[in-house]
Amino acid sequence: MREKVQRFMYGRYGFDELSKVALAATLVLMVVSLFTKNRFIYLVSLILLVFSYWRALSKNTKKRQQENRKFLSIRYRGVARWGKWKERQAQKKVYRFYKCPGCGQMVRVPKGRGRICITCPKCQVEFIRKS
Image (cartoon, rainbow, N blue to C red; front, side, top):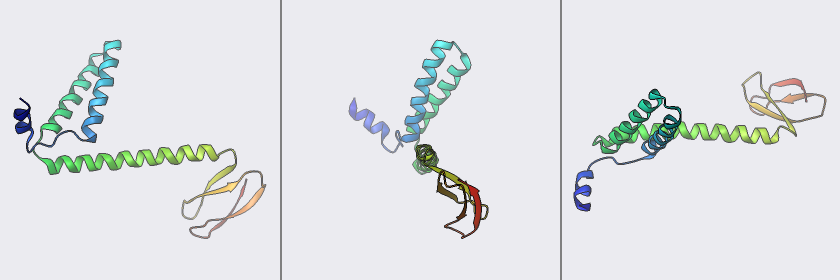
C-alpha cells in the first residue's frame, strides 16, 4: 500500500509552507464554524481544504514553487515588520522616533533633552524637534 502511495505521489508537488498554512486556517475555520454555525465560514474552510490538496497533488511544480516563494517573501516582510514594531515599542520609554523630512528615514533620539537639532544620518538634513 505504501508503495502505491509513493508511486501515485511521484512527480507531484506535495505539501509546502503555503499548503500547511492553508490547512491550519482550514482547521481553525472549521472549529469556528462548528461553534458559530455559520455556513459561509464553513464554505471558506472547505475551499481552503480543496486548495491545499490541489496544490499538494499538482504536477506543475515550477508554478507551485513560485507561489510558495511569493508567499514566503510576503510572510517574511510581515514578520520583519512585526519585529521592528515590537522593538520600537520596547524602546519607546527611552527614545523618541522621528521621520526625516528629506528622505523619510526613521531617526531615534533620546527623550527628555528639550528642543534639539537632529541630523539625519542618511541624507544629512537638519531639523528641529522636541525630544
